Image 1 (cartoon, rainbow, N blue to C red):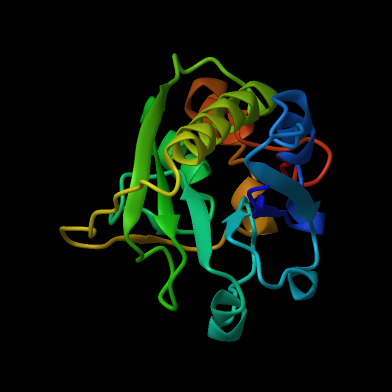
Image 2 (image 1 turned 180 degrees about the vertical axis):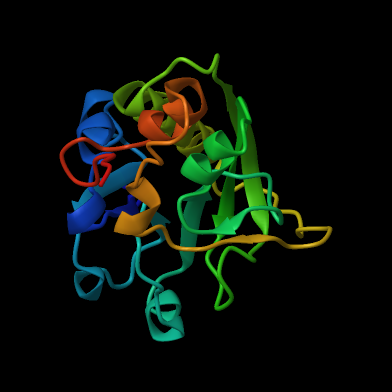
Length: 202
């Protein structure tokens, strides 16, 4: 009997919005080829064939990468542009409606690894936070499925071009300027999580 390929999904306890979609789209379903499991503690992941790191807000050490065969990250920008934090939110604030997604190899430098898969979503500019997250989940799971279907016959390409970086967002980024009309504030309100980081004014 062929040994199953061990797959781990590493999520962040403080940012685990994707968890319900992993279950909804059946990434954990029983398979003849894969044995899959969700983790929120990276220390519990050892000797796995593939680790998918999804919306994880901490930088993983090289020692972790060495404990598993292949660690992959899903990042929502057209790399090497838009490395760093909250790429979807920053791009919406830049009034972009087409958001690219990359499945790339985790590396010691942030979002600099080889790219295995690409996809994109198209927004119409009216979607609010929950709808944006839904589209993000669909694109994320779509490229993961595509990769798993091909594995181990997968091909990667090096990133080319000049890198740009997005900084980490803070509470201050959610402050609304009361001197601006709502139309100009709308994108800022669209990306707000009303439970964890709501828009507000002083």
